[in-house]
Length: 224
Image (tube, rainbow, N blue to C red):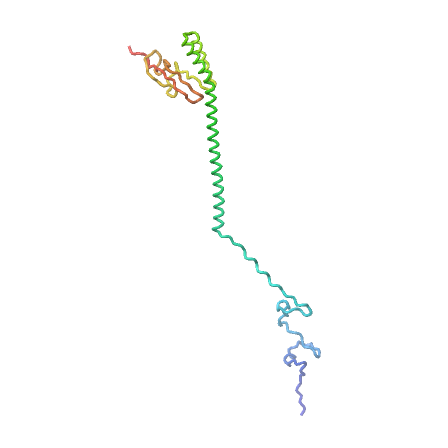
């Protein structure tokens, strides 16, 4: 009895199951394996596996050099340095201010001294005239005495005007306590509070009072 079963030859070790799964109409070439299935993993590049490519010389990859350790400043030291800088600046500023204050005081003192010397220089001729008047009085030269006194008075009044000192015109004015000093009050025909007499003249320099005028003030008409 003849065996009618179909025999499927095994080509290059391929299993009959693999042959059955081959697509219809496709015949594998003798001595070659069939195409790899789509689900097969792609080849791994040589650089990922660490293996050098065929024919290329092996290259040793140098490891990256370790970064130099960064210098970290101590926060307390930085604050202390900033504090010292501020203190040095304040000390320099204080020294400059002290020098300026001393220089200003010295300049003010020198200016006052120059002003006093200037006034004294102007007063010396007045003193000379007074000495001449006294000498004339000793020799009973009344004419020269009167002339010397008048000259001295004129020089002194001119000196006061040059220094900006003016006489307060108080006679007949209404009593002003900021410029007048009342020594007494007397009845008079003038209205109450009017200056009737000046006992001692007052002087002012600009808006500043040098000396108040000593005056007599009217208390109004006398009662009958």
